[in-house]
Image (cartoon, rainbow, N blue to C red; front, side):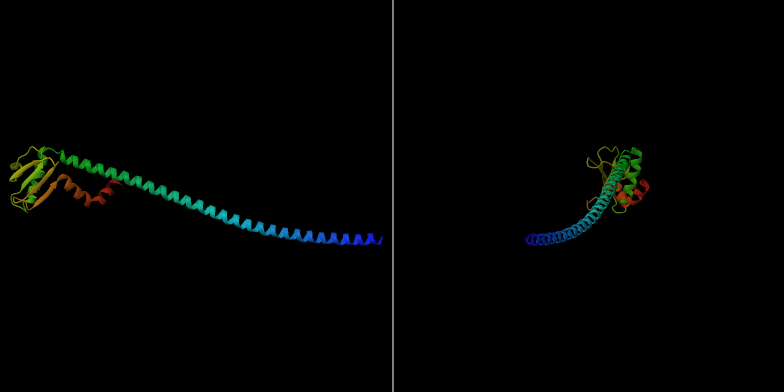
Length: 185
């Protein structure tokens, strides 16, 4: 029996050691699990924050992109309107009555006579007037001019472009802000 008692004591001691080791292991596992859960929780919070910021940034970028595209469309439409207004203004000038054009051409010639005494003129081949009608020494009709005049000194050293499209473009460029303000208030 003494052997049984010793065996029992050894087994009890071994069982106690196993229980202590298992308790220590369970405590270590619980500690590792708690640390892991904490690290995972922190990573999840950081990732959620990063994802939220990325979504907000993407939203801002999309809004900014949409606003920019909207501005491009508006500017494109404004340019179309301005181009149409320019074309209509030019067409109106070029299709004016012969009497109106004659008066305008005489004023152009008078203005150029301050630079050259007896200019010659180039006009549209469709014009029905003569050199005498507008007060120039010579009137040459050319296909490159659609309206207005190009006036030139007798010796050809001075040339003044008074075509409707040139005059309109000069005024247009100079007054673009005013025109835009009027059209797009």
